[in-house]
Length: 496
Image (cartoon, rainbow, N blue to C red):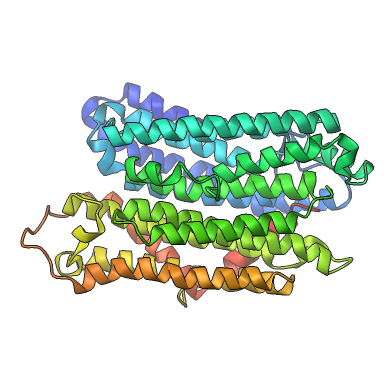
């Protein structure tokens, strides 16, 4: 992926300016390399790594234990690569407005994807920090890419608040290192196990370090109460960048959270289930409550993604709790983490479909205000229908993928003794139907304005990205078994 990013920048330097329109298609083709290699490793080297790890060998680790090549990391490679490929196609109209910076745009996008792939594989704290910065800094530049007032403000806010979260994480990592004497997750787990998991052993330093790490990860996954940057960035950044940030960055954040929690800190004497359940309930409630009052569709989706972070954390809390209520059974015996990974895939398809449709509609009506979507079905039935499909999926209406994911997540919560959290999730899902359906009502039932709006774009690339994302969205609702099987293999590769 890093090689693809470098080649994109080089091609931008050597290609004549009149051939600059080929750059997004070159970037799209280059993504076949990481995807094919990950696919080969998932079905071949992934099994070998699982066998080695099951015998106690650390054969899946590379670079002196800082990265792990296992099916868990490769699962997120597919997710990040697929999302990046669709966003590259959807970005062709945006970079057309700024032809001088096409190479920089796609280079930054692919470098950020490189950081996300490293995050999923990182098993050492310093590597995690470097991967987080490689993920975040390109997105800060991309958020300000339009160079308008709102876009510059979005990039600045993401950069400043991201720097604060990085500082918190570094302080937490320093405390963890001081307590355990190592930055590798397996050695941290051994040190915690030797201490019996008692935080008092480290004079509370380990507990403070863990809290700071959780705060930093909360920023990356846009969970409450660390969500203050989300609505402004979603409103001001270019729509394809927001689409990539909302799905790929969130997936990478959850990947590193799983890796750190279940590999390094699971034995700490801390009620992880209560902590994750509290974050889940707060994220769902705050996100859905504030989204109901939004008039800008991109800000609405900003608060929506906070709510979906809460739904995902329900599965995390259920998996942690299962270890306590089901003795002598591994934590991964529940479907909690499997369902979280499936949820991430279904959410990626739904959110990319929605944002690609919003980008096309924004070009047509020249606005992101929900009221300006009035009568859109009569002016552009394909866009209105596709956006409505994504909105119905985000509510969790059957037979969509997110409905199946929510069913698994809430079932896992009930089975693990967190029935109250499942009830909170169901109530919030019902609340979210209000603001999602409000958009559909405006598009289909309100009268269209007299002005016809701009004609639809003739560029086939954004339409292809929209079509593929919508097709995957429908496929996950009809045939979820393939992705659930891959998610199960990915979770089992953590080997805890």
